[in-house]
Amino acid sequence: MSSDSIERSTRILTIPNILSLLRLFCIPLILLFMWERDLHWALILFVAAGVSDALDGALARLLKQKTVFGMYLDPAADKLLLSSSFLVLALTGEVSWLVAGFVLGRDVVLVAGVVVLVLTTQTRRFPPSVLGKANTVVQVAAVFVLLLDEVYAYRWLHLLRLSLLGLTPLLAALSGTQYVYRGIDIFRRRRLSQSECGV
Image 1 (tube, rainbow, N blue to C red):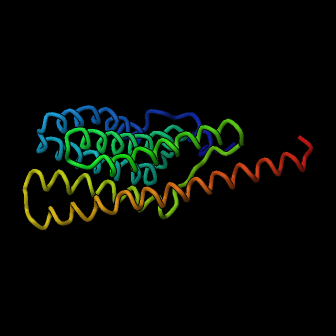
Image 2: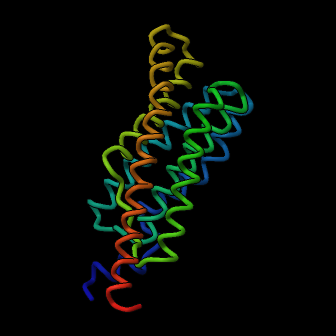
Image 3: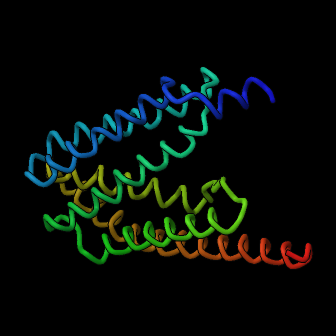
């Protein structure tokens, strides 16, 4: 086993992982500020979370500190931040429940699918598709622009906010459907392989 493999499987408290953990611990504060309508501080912490997300990925590559723990922690922190943000923003009336429903529904379906695949196949890596990445970018941009619009109230920000919130459910539906088909294909090929081996 190479030293890189050992590092990926055993190290936890690397600099990138610490940044991801800090982002995770910031989520309750961001949600509290959203709930209390203190959107200036919610915006500041949301931007800080975005910067930490960019930094942890860059540092993991630069310092050669990619770990198995980080491979799961980083996207989990991102999804928790976005899903919970849309939920709280729906509860406070900033986004419609239709938009929040597509975001949350997609995440529930994907988590359930990952659990099924982990329990029934040998698949442990779930790389994002182009549509999946686009979905994440649009969701981040939608929350960011919404907070900007609430704090600064420029007309162009409001129009951009409406456009991004209109695009959010569409990309959530498209990327979610793509991942479902991908999961079904992985499961089908696994069952076919088992039948050919007489399992």
